[in-house]
Length: 530
Image 1 (cartoon, helix red, strand yellow):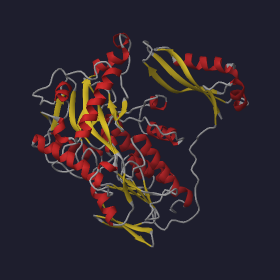
Image 2 (tube, helix red, strand yellow; image 1 turned 120 degrees about the vertical axis):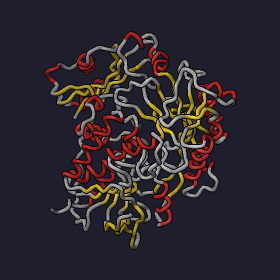
Image 3 (cartoon, rainbow, N blue to C red; image 1 turned 45 degrees about the horizontal axis):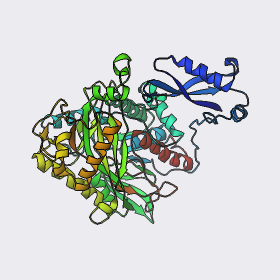
Image 4 (tube, one colour; image 1 turned 90 degrees about the vertical axis):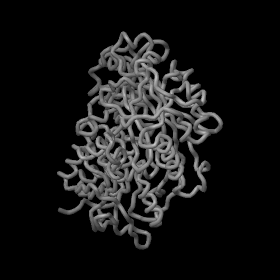
């Protein structure tokens, strides 16, 4: 049982013990009455013309904690029960080892929980392990061929491995703390457990993913790379086995964590009678600014005086029944080539743990609804995305990305070069018009959004800011529908999980959904004997 004291605002640079002292004062309690006190969350607030840090402090071991919180009658002082992760273990015997399909954040955490509690999962992943995957990506960036099974989207760690490693989420789930603890256990920096906007960075995240895989194997799991799912076999509406390109795996329980870009797998699932439906998603561009200018716009003069982290932003605007918003903001980051199909162009963003790149970038995304698709069938959103990606490829005549300065974008004229902001897309860009590969409604909504965001952050609509297109993989265009018991509506025993199934958005929520899926198996079945 704990008391959470939030909203403790201190000048930037004050030591953390000052926040803990303030928590004692607000609770009107002596240090000697508290068993343990620690900072739970800390964030930077650059509003109001000054830089402050805002803390949430936890006080544990106080007598009558709930009564004390009620007596204080302060909305920033809350009593909360401890949310320790303690899964229920079932008793029914499993005929075969459970299978985890896909090794992105959802599959990785599902496999880890299953392995930790004695279920010896079999994991299949269409791509390579980290080291080999790095080679494939580097080869593509240097002019080699695109490996459609091992790239920025597919392989150990999933698309999240080549990202900023952002762990922010809007979900309120006690499993979030457990995910953070697991990440730290395998090499992530300890501060992610207290940061309001934690991130790991691509460079560190790769080591964490590798360490988790090694532990899964040590605990009895089996990870099979370069093994694609090719079929789902059911009898009387229940899962009996899965088919892979290397043969059949008999199983009655499987976590389907295929990621949001597994288009061929969506097609196969639809053909095999797994119930799918189209869902909303977003498309747009990557926008790049000089990080130094973003710092000064958000921190003011303090950007030069204080040792502040690279500034980040989160922007949104809704107009004409459609949203335009920033997504996956990467301070000091790079735009990356994220295609997983031949003859397409796809962008994404990443940054390393230090976030020390010259540019800031983020997706500027415009909401797309199933009513925008041609026919509204389960796979029509994929066709919508693919049309944009192939148009971008045709626009540049290859894997280079269309790129345009913001000033030219507003004037609808082709860019011929960049200004002070230099593009970071690794394969190279072709200056021109990003509108040549985007639907008109997306282009118009982007113009509205950029103008509005320029009023919120000085210089966001700077003439030399760069737009690189297209960003199409913000989330899955498909939902693999599951019931309240988490199982597929048409294949009992199959648990659609994570971003690809349409039940998560980002590393943290996908990992939490993976833990949830594994827990579903744990609570019904006993560990595998031997």
